[in-house]
View 1 (cartoon, one colour):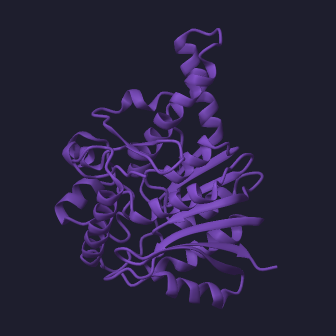
View 2 (tube, helix red, strand yellow):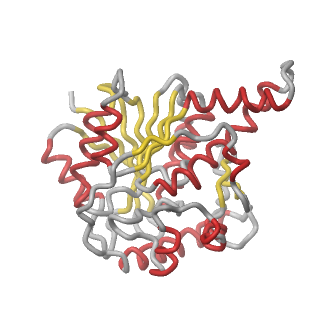
Amino acid sequence: MAFSFNFDIPLQTDETNDKENKDDKSKDVALKCSEASAPVSEKIKDAVEHQPLLDPLSKIDNWIPETVTIGALPPLLCLNESVFEKTASEREDSEEILAKTLTQNSDLISGVYEGGLKIWECTYDLLEYIDDEGETFAGKRVLDLGCGAGLLGILALKRGATKVDFQDYNSTVIEQLTVPNVFLNCEEDDENEEKNSSPPPKRKALNASEKLVDRCGFFSGDWNSFLRLVQKKTPSPKYDIIFTSETIYNTDYYSSLHNVFSDLLDENGMVYLATKSHYFGVGGGLHLFEKFVEQNNIFQIRYLKDVEQGLKRHVVSLTFKK
């Protein structure tokens, strides 16, 4: 098993080095989050549905992908975070989050930037769980909530999901990271499927992009606004699976997150939540969220995976109480 992310090291490392890097990153995350514990902004960030170009990769300069490999899962490609830092001034960023994160040397600015440009540790924990369990998503409708790089939703696409919607707080994350990652990862799959078909290469690429756009949705904004936006659709979507990773770090967000779960999850669906036990300096964590869920008495929580190295982490599921 190997991981590749945010370090200037070879893409493939042995298992021992991976664990050491992961533990070091956990400590770094705790430190940077503690520096970003400002009160949540009261300003609502209206949700927007993004309509990607049919060839978004052609508009991305300095595209340097890394490969994430976990067990038997298909390799997943993602844009190197250091590229964003080095080319921030050249990128479209109406929210100016790239400049703000560099200026404040912080991975999280509550109410302004919610960490979507980083791949956080618990995302890898959830990917490992999926690999261990041999989960597939054929015929499923999936929501990648707080998606960031979108690796969880991308995996669902590659394993047969009918529809995957990606949501992140920041529009810059969706446009500059999530959308390109989705197209990069699925482009090769589409090319392999159509390599023996008759249309010329440009027509093939267009057909593949059109099919991918039909299977994906991209949204930015806060969760309350996102919920209102998608509920206006006819019919209002219901998801078989909701993925969410590292999203319960702030207790102020628990109500809106819980509302998304209760209103958008299919009655027989499941939420997969990957999280740390506690987020130092920010205040949230699994035990506080578990207490919040119990008070609302809608969902039952089941522990699926515990990770002891570094900061203690968990993968849990939420399903409706019967």
